[in-house]
Image 1 (tube, rainbow, N blue to C red):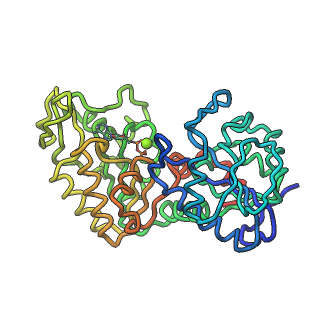
Image 2 (image 1 turned 135 degrees about the vertical axis):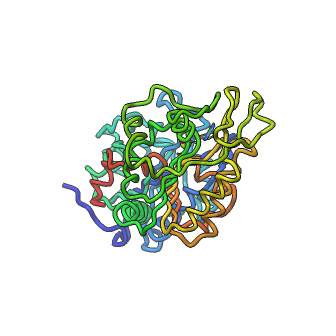
Image 3 (image 1 turned 90 degrees about the horizontal axis):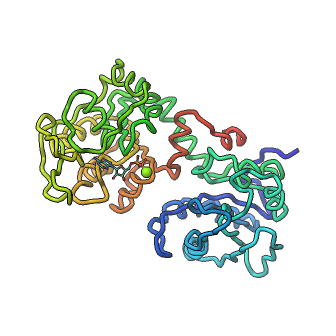
Length: 383
Ligand code: ADP
Ligand code: MG
């Protein structure tokens, strides 16, 4: 039988360390090393205690047959090595015997290149476990997945949660269970059906609810406003329709103006009041008056939880609403928690990470945690 242990007490051991190094990358270049930087503390601490480290991570969604070269962890390995100032030996085959030699750290290839990983095959977990003495899990982003390199390994080695997953869970718990009021939640992004449970979870606790992006367009359309040819979700689940009619929906702060474009190129943006949107417009961002209105609410809030960009951030100037609200948060003293891959990218590009109280490394995992769904790894880790 394996047991739960404390990562700080591991010494002189071969530690298998599951990290989430699934970073955005293109043409062999890493576009954001946020997740890598968040993994440095656990590595440095383990090294201080004279441990050797075997790093595991996935990258993207490769097929076991193709092992797409663009999804190799090679680049990530080099990047991590440079950030640590420590050489890392890269190992391709999971069955290869590890010889550390001069190295204190080795890293295996993308866990999803190995047959059995996503099916949580115990044979694969057993093979991986043969390389180490204990298992430390610090990959919050996959804490909703039962795979060989997540829960699977815990059947073969004593296991411990790492410091990152502990702080992720503690932060999420604090805003869920005892948020300092007033609480403002901003839920935005592409599709409301994927975020409705999140909205409902916060709607009781929140004093103000701000919607944006496709979620706002969908809400406005349901309220009878023209939203033209915007990103909206049709065939809404009953859950969403019921929420729009509920008492909690009264906490939604209406925008006053929106940024639209009627041109297929999405050039020629126009700010329009919400009742002036035409059938050929696309709503792509919130307008300046809406930004001011939302900013006032945020400034009076003690806690802000935010997931999802407020507009079509991939194209200027439709990132203005999102960037303006990030600046408001960066300048405020409120406790701000932000999660979601696309939202976090904008913050990083602006370089204001340090002015936000907490930025989560878990995209989907954070949402699942808040929704109270499928957190197999977290349960097993007793967090
Ligand atoms: P996150 O990854 O932060 O959880 P989502 O994946 O839900 O966020 O949504 C982000 C996507 O939604 C971005 O690609 C963004 O361009 C898009 N989006 C937001 N608002 C709009 C809009 N008004 N029109 C078109 N796309 C939008
Ligand atoms: Mg996204």
